[in-house]
Amino acid sequence: MQALSSLRRPGSARALLLTATVPLIVTVAGLSVLVAVEARRLSEREIAELETQLIEAKKRELKNYLALARTAIARDYNPALPDDRAAQERVKQTLAAMVYGSDGFIFVYDYTGTNLVAPRETRLINRNWAGLRDIEETPVVDELIDLARAGGGYHSYLWTKPSTGETERMVSYVIGLQDWQWAVGTGIFIDDVLEAVSAARAETEQRIRATFGWIAAITIGALWAVFLVGVVIVMRDRRRADRKLKALTLRIFDTQEEERGRVARELHDSISQMLVGVRYALELARRRLASGDARAADNLDRGVANLSAAITEVRRISRDLRPSVLDDLGIGPALQALTEEFEQRTGIHTEFETVVFSNRLAPEAKTAFYRIAQEALTNIERHAEATVVKLSVFGHKKGATMRISDNGKGMEASGGRGAGSRGLGLRNMHERLERLDGRLTVTSSAEGTLIEATVPLTRLLAPDTDNGRRRSRAPGTSDTASPIPPAEGPRP
Image (cartoon, rainbow, N blue to C red; front, side, top):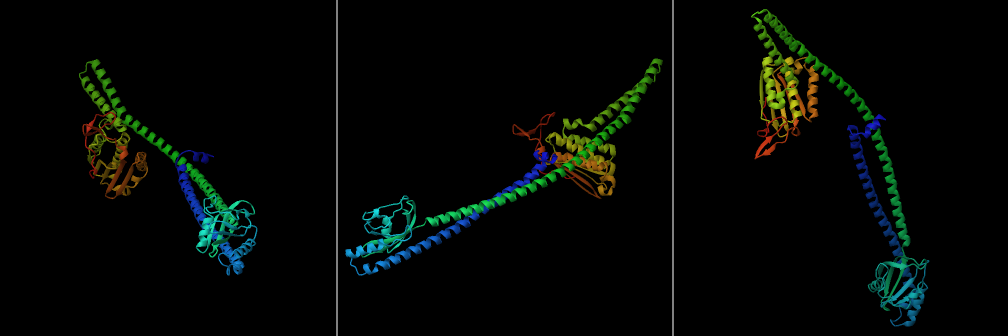
């Protein structure tokens, strides 16, 4: 249940599931559409071929009927003259008798459009139907006469089916008796062909729907598999995150206790001793003043000196905890003060280079750079056995970079330099920059160590424009004009 509730909350696990399921759904949808389009295209081609074959079979059947009709009237038509009325009557009777099936018959029109033979639709006989069109505005009689004049041909149109009285698609084949100016033809309804085609299309759609059903079932199964894998990953990540959180919490507590212990030692070993000395000096001066001893002034001077030293020590401890120069003057002066104090305390030659940032760095980036420099200098003092340290800070088109290098013996050669508190220090550096979307690079060899910390351009404050000069502001500081940091800074 905890894993399921985690999936409902935004985070890396939910992003992982979305990353896995969205491409799967899109891919399956694309494949489904492709399968449907290809299936319809192939089925339409097959159905079109089937329809063509069935209609061609119907057309051959029509030709056979007319061939039989031509044979049946040959003995009357062939020897007759164009105005032989008796022969024409005999031919009409012969053709009128040639009916087949429930709807098949022979029809005759003269070239003026008058119907002469229509055994299944006697209402048409002896009436002129020139200009007749079906419900789709397709010319019927005129087209049949034109085909007869040209020697014969096929024509498709809508016509009333005698057996049902419904309007259906009909295909006719007509030939011409040129001596008599007659168009003789027969037709066949192809509603059975259209029904077969419709049935084939319905079957195709059913197959496509079945295919979609299988694809949907497979997709649902895959999504369930992804979901279950996601649950497992979430549970594993939660356990790992819990372990990391516990370790981080312990590390924070240890760091806090270590810092408290350091401050307590600083107060006890320096401030407390100095204040005790001040107290003793003042008490001694008071006793000597009461007795009129002239040496009371020396005790007062010693107490004032001890008190001044205590004040200086308090300022040093305060500066270590949070240097005011970092907020007041910016990262450059703060790092310069840090390196000067480091050189005075350790005797290690320290070089510092920077460009004028005018507090362009965001407050969190300044703090990160300062703390990383503090940690690096502390490690150099304790472990590196270096004689020269170089520190540089510069801006570029991708952000800002701080480099710290020494000529010490390197991490690999210093034994414990990469473990214990040193390892904690490096982790702290990494974590500070990760929170700022920055990057920490550590390169170490027997010739020395190079630490490079970079923050992105988003961690630099945007400059204001005032009278054509670029200016920048930072909280608690005055405006100071300065150029944009160069594309490349000094190399240590």
